[in-house]
Length: 290
Image (cartoon, rainbow, N blue to C red):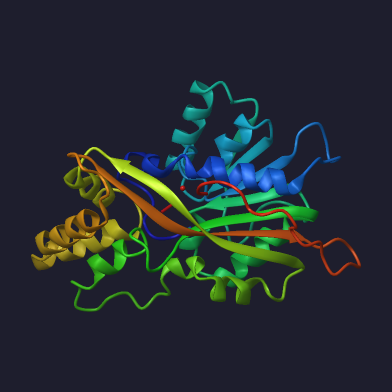
């Protein structure tokens, strides 16, 4: 993964939507159904981050044999420590790797997940191909991503409009647009379903939310540094606070909002078949790297 994911405090921000991973994991495992691949389904969580927000520990808690992969060793050290504290060290292991070239043979996993993680990878088509490649025929791929028009999808644009030259890179929230997602997966042996879900996000206050978001590793920290050099960060900070305040549904001093995300669930085709459609409705109140 790219985008400066070292430094800062990822967990302080992303733990606010950590529960989303439980919904994504439960949805994927329900779609998978009984597996004959072993005593426990094999689950890969791509861009697992610190392990709580994304799905590695959620899968381990559900009884799966989980692998969490990320390109940043510092985040994985935190994930490993969290697994040990939760008594899940035997069920979840963490490896350094690249979402563009997953270090596993084809068909290694029954389920391949990512919650607000692979959306930050630089080559969406290659990521889609890798997710499908390492999932066995009949297995499930599930990805949750913030939508571009939702409150979390508007965080980066709110900041980058203060830059002289906003980034020309494709926005991560393209993963939250079903038109893009279907284009990337169209050449691959997988049948997709998508739906919008909502994730309840809670912070002690609006000011606390902006502070932890600005210190979360990733592209936003680089934007903050550039704006601080230009003397414009205070204006961007105020705009972020206004964005969160506009979506706040709390009547108290805390911040509570429902952030929309796109949940994509696909079943990988078996040999010589056109694919098995996911017949059951994608369930859960909401599906984190974000």
